[in-house]
Amino acid sequence: MALNNNEAYLSRLSKLKNSDYRHIKFCEMLQEWSDSEENELIERVLIALVNCENLFPSVEDKIYFFEYALKKRSSKMVKLIEASGLDIHETRLDDGKSAVHYLAEVIYGINDVHTLDTKSKTLKVMEYFLENPCKNYCDKHGYTYLHAACMSGNATAVNLLLSQGVDVNIDSHKYSPLHIAAQYRHEEIVEILLINGADPNKQDVEKSTPLHALTRLCICQCTNGITFCDKRKPVDKIVQLLIKYGANVEARNRDGDSPLDLAVSRFDVQLVESLLKHGASLDNLNEDKMFSAEFTSTELKNYPLTLNIIEMMDLLKSAGYEMSLNTRLRMIKCWMRVRGNDTDHWIGDTDDLRQVLITF
Image (tube, rainbow, N blue to C red):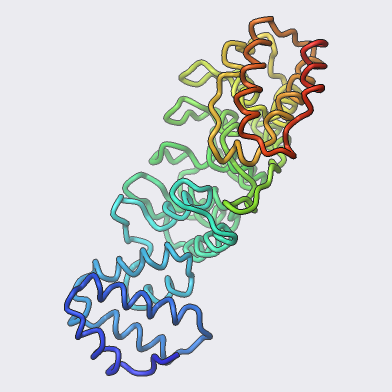
């Protein structure tokens, strides 16, 4: 790498009068350095350049480079920006999010186009923020480091934050830590939270409980825009833990849906089987919503939904459930709707669907 002294690059960057272009050129330097082998001299040069007030006079310049490091999922860059004097834990992005909040949303595709290793890189950067947190940092959306640790499954950080006196039922964010741990199906985290007094019936902004949260989208971590995976993490132990600590299996959210209603509408066979095993009643199942769910492009690409429909109907039938004629017609419409988005090798055999219609 050509970077080897302050003066040469100070001179080069000083000649760039446009501050935006200067940002871009310095980011190119960061990328070149990040892709190279460790070099303490070059690192010291870069830190000196970041701190040069003639080049980058405000803290906003450092935040710009910090956001670039986050977008590149580079722990190496993040550490360098921190070494330049920026408090990476207290820094807030333009939308008021903390770095860990931004990274949490990236992991499951809310604001990112995935590359092959995006998720593993993102988790690695997030883990750097969660190493020995001295407090439960909170951003403008109420998202805290405890929420991030529950999302990433970092038991060490969860235990450390709780030992510092952080409220296990903290309600600063729209979802509680237990809701998040349940959604991402981290058994160990769910158990830690419940042991420390987390409320298994706490409602979020949608009046949903942690049992409802189990029905939310949680694509396998290996999934991205290039490769797909329909694996769902095991859920039975989490349901068992929540019920053990007093969760109401028939709780209703603001739309009147029970966890079973949502699980059936998402065709999550394992979750439905677990809910039924732990006391959910088929008598209260809302047929009107059974085939009304809208699926995201991510779900349509990853889950073999036509096969899931067949498996779900088999499960309900074996449990003694009888479906009305109108519901059967909605099932066919749903089948046709999702079938058009299934890849060829995931499309269930139409003979299987015919058999379900005949026998159900």
